[in-house]
Length: 133
Image (cartoon, rainbow, N blue to C red; front, side, top):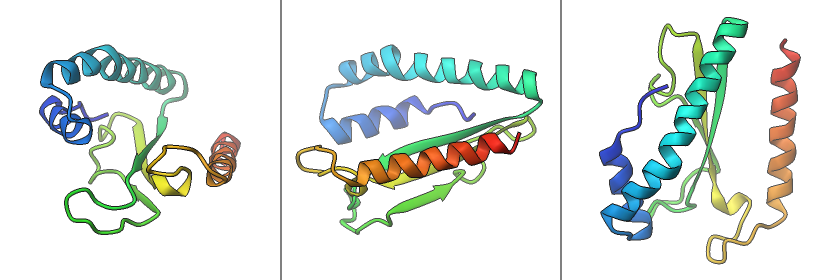
């Protein structure tokens, strides 16, 4: 996996929530860094056990770009030009960006019926991946 870019994370976090830099750094240290360290350990263990590992990296995005005001597509798939995985390491990753209004009201942050539909889709994807052996 590509290492996180702390400066980028700090800028994005401040842009989204307006918190001060110390609070953003605290959240990165308390939540983001430990989560990604545990994920890296799990992927490495899977690679040792099975020879390869695969990560489905899911994220959400606002329905409208915050800087350009352009409506975003419902789903974006990618691998960030190959940087979401470390080439030659046996760990592959695909990133899925879901537009938030597919499953919640972006003003109230209340889930709606689209959430159950997405959960069913991801359950089907997980079952298909498991069936590959």
